Length: 230
Image (cartoon, rainbow, N blue to C red; front, side, top):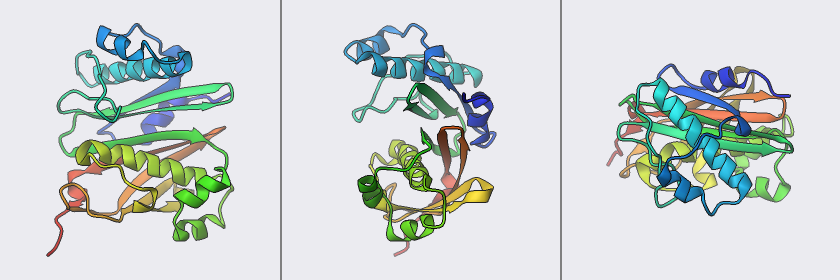
């Protein structure tokens, strides 16, 4: 059994962010009309994930003083957060275990948040080949077998972090990761210019592993954005 999940999600972020998580089954509040319409055609498992994410999001928003609101989706299917709010939602299923977590912030200095959770097990070989760079494969050779899943999760949370500001989906090889295993941290470098052709300084994020899960998180601050040099 996975225990103490609520505090783990918060530990992934700085004190500028409010995060919470828990079993999907525990967060099944009635949805506002706008969200209920979105969920109506979903399969039961997907509807439960969607409901848990929106329920947790409203709890987190309420904790930072934002009134309860419906959270529609944008054209890419990502949550459309209230003005002035950055946020991220993740769902994970592993056998009988199903969890959802959310992170939100109202701090103007934060351009994006990334949060992801994955089962702590190796990726299928064909996915590892597609996702990891040559340098990452060399680094992973001396680490636990599930480290390729950790790298995948890190890249997923980076994409979630950047999409709201850039409107772009990064390719897996656009992001190169260095893992600091004993510190529970990682550094990511974004290869192409992004955010109106500006570049991004290396970002530091955090990860936690517990029982069957790998959890990753990252914050994008305005100070990380560098003007491209001519």
